[in-house]
Image (tube, rainbow, N blue to C red; front, side, top):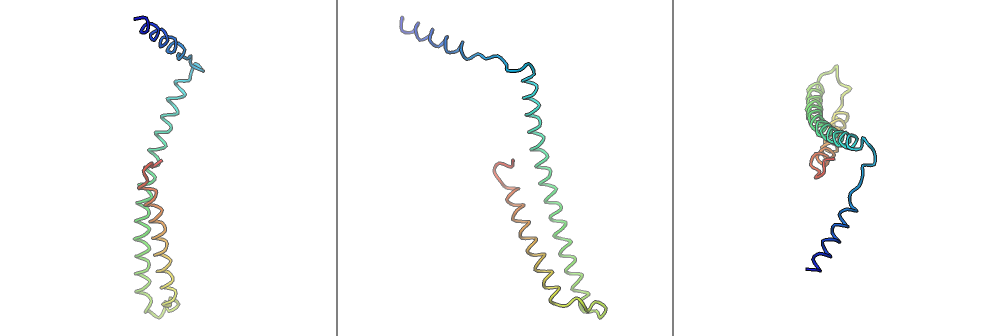
Length: 115
């Protein structure tokens, strides 16, 4: 019984030393405001990722449309300056841009800690 009493007294002393006063009077308000700001940042980050996907798809479709339209005008004499080399260079550039942006967007979108 004596041993239990000593342990209880020891734990009471430990727990009484763990009580701390708040460092500032508005500490809780500042902490809650900081947590809300972090939550808003995460929400905005996810919204920006969705917008990035939207504009990536729109840009990809418009790039493909430009290449298709230019290939139709390649045979007309008024657009003879669009040689096969320029059209091929445009296609390669658009494909590289799509691949590089897609890779970066996939990395950002499917990270474990999106923030």
